[in-house]
Length: 438
Image (tube, rainbow, N blue to C red; front, top):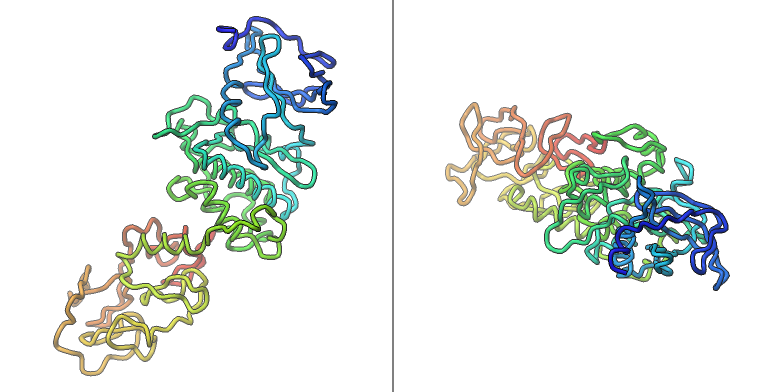
């Protein structure tokens, strides 16, 4: 066989009724970058299949190499939501791949579509993609045209033609996927698992709103009003994280994204969405997120407490819970400080003359001794007294802290108060109560 497996000089005049081994061509379903797909009848088994054949180049020759690559990659994957290779053969010196025949692709469906339907399709795609990621495979071309739909509401991800297998560090690639569904870093030839997650986020946004976000992917994009109307705040936040231009702020892989997705879907839409996962014990996404937040910000907030409403981590310096927006948290019995302000129920030190969290009355008989182990990273511009992070007022002179608290490693600032926030975790600004989504 030798050199014939790479570039074939023999011409195939494909047409309706043409025979390739046991297959009889019926009609061409589509054509991609490296292969064309035909509806064909398996004359031995008596069933219809999708037959993939290399496309001809400008010289009229067909290149087998990319199909060989796809076969070897997909042969390692066995999953309900990944299009399997039914049969692969070399017929008349050409690689021919037979797969299950779908009745259409997601690209054939209208935009926007039923919310329950697109959520079900995305859940199945993420399930299959998570399996591929666990096997160190980046798809690189997750598009509506590569999501195949079958009877009984089943969806499967196919066309792994330009997929990349990660062994150590990702190598630069020359094929960038389908325009419109490519993550920024993939356009520069550096795809990762996060690039596939970005593509899934684009598809979800497109089929909920009818609008496909375009570069430079500024949030909120066109169609945002419809997104808010058709979904809940948690799902909006999920999509925003998936579409972050910075890969580090997206989901690490499709497995993590699936857990967050199932958690973000409105409860009334969850039953039957992904039946095969109902008997699986999935990790608690809220717990994973909580641990990630505490690990990142434990040096900024020296103590965390559970919110009385949502049980997420909050700090005494916060005016409201940044997760659920409640202002009902009190610290009378759980403060790390020695005394409690009677106005805002937050802790104060004995040497402070005023509460730094609220504009409350002066404290009686301040201690002349400083509490040991207390480090003040900033000084008041008026009295030069020490300030702890996120104090609203100076505890020594009662003047309001005018300079906005912008602290590392927070990646953003609130567009209202200009204090540090992180929208990858929070829904509300804990300092001014502003809604952060959108």
